[in-house]
Amino acid sequence: MITQITFDEVVKLIKTSPEQAIFDWKSDFAPPTDDEKRGELIKDISAIANAITTSYGFIIYGVDPRRSDPILGISARYDDAKIQQLIKGKIEPPVKFLYYEVTAGPRAVGVLQIIPTRSRPHIIRVDIGKVRKGQIVIRRGSSTDGADINDLFEFFYGQHSKYFQNVLHNLRANVDQQNATTNYLRELREASEQARRDMEDIIGIKLR
Image (cartoon, rainbow, N blue to C red; front, side, top):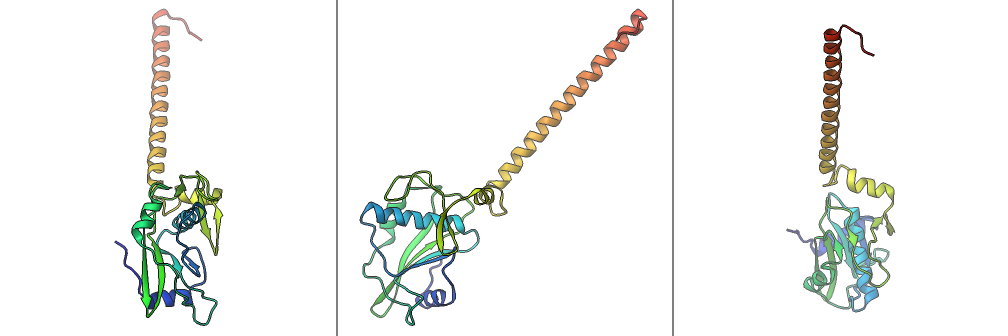
């Protein structure tokens, strides 16, 4: 369940937080009516989802923190159901998010709020616009980049990875199997040595 932020909290966020991994802003909301805009939206959501682990991520539409009055308002209204349908099946594993709009007088601001995840990496599953199937993108500071080897290590072995316990379990299972094999081979060697000694006792000859 997402706790939506208020208009005052939006204003506080954009005035006090620089553009960063968990916060992106757009001066307007461009309805995703073509593949390029759809691809851009998919990339933005995936990138922030891959960057956050413990706090919400936000894309705020209709603002410009560089202006004295940062609230511009969006020129086109939209709704969450349409975005959910657009994103469905295009990012794996799925990203949980909510789009809503908050208003102050005649101006509305769009908020795309993304739930922190332990299921990274979120991988784009379609070719659409400028994004490609198999891409792993991540929000890095104020820009979006492709994931590198350090990101992948964090995704699978970091403290916020949901996969790490499985990795440890598999490692332990492998160690246990190796120990069992080592013990079995030792027992075979000991049995072989004992059989040799027994034979020497019977025939009275030292065997090499």
